[in-house]
Length: 87
Image (cartoon, rainbow, N blue to C red; front, side, top):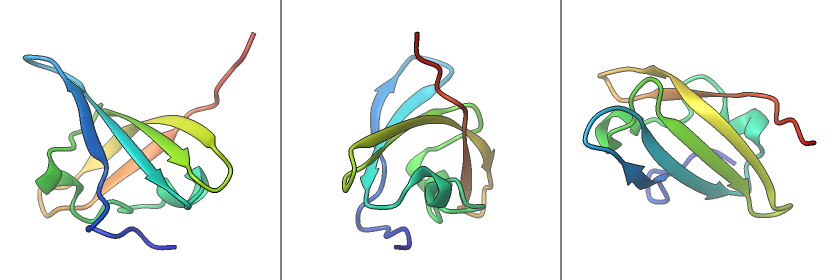
C-alpha cells in the first residue's frame, strides 16, 4: 500500500528542544515505510532529521524503530530503520 495523508504518523513525545518521537501503524512493512520520501507530508507534520519513528505493521504486529534521515521543506520525509538486537 502507499502512504495515505489521511492516516499520518502521530507525534507521541516531544521535549522542549531536540528529537521528537512518532508512532506509525499501517499494513506496510518497514521495507516499504523506509522508501525515499514515503511520508509525503512529513515536514508539514513536524518531522525533522533525527526524529525517532516507531512503525507497527498491523497485519503481523512487527515493530521497527528508525530515524528520520531526510526532511525536505517541500514536504517529503525519509526514514531509515536500523537492525534491532535482542539479548
